Length: 251
Image 1 (cartoon, one colour):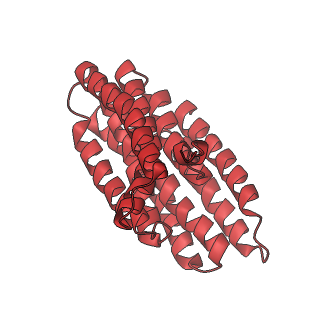
Image 2: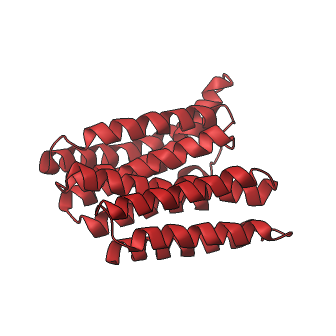
């Protein structure tokens, strides 16, 4: 019987994707803590974990082959899907069905990214922006699960998207040395949106400060002629994400 290494099948090697998932979750749970929101976070985590083995299994089946790796991926995806479904059901039972609307929107973005991943186009701009949008919307669902008002839930999703979308463009610009104008415009738009929401008293002053700092980081980072190593970029972005969540959540 052919042995299969399970760890590469069970855990995706996508450090940036982990950060994009946890930042909106952390932001929403700190601002609107609730048991239902925590359960939604658990469901989102297991759904994210299920994506990787499911993608590998789908790619094998598209090639017309079903190997030991394919079967292992199917079982791993199922093992992840069960707690995701249970956590989602429990979250909806406690917090009501209101989060289903943003979850449906987030699922549409995730489905598009998954399709691109299966066809080995997961690194395209459309796929990466779609994934960033899907994770940002999770913040709104978690807030609604905690019975937050729609304006607050939408504001959290916009702030999360103001972090994930421009950051996706920023990291791509550092890697490929192009798309600088689009990256700066996206950061500027996020900062303007944060200011508008602050003036409407939807978010604290920490939100526009955080977006302004991210804009400054993008300007300085894109001026460097030699981009840092991917690992260094990832570590720095995790730090920036943690700082942004802290500024907004505790302001």
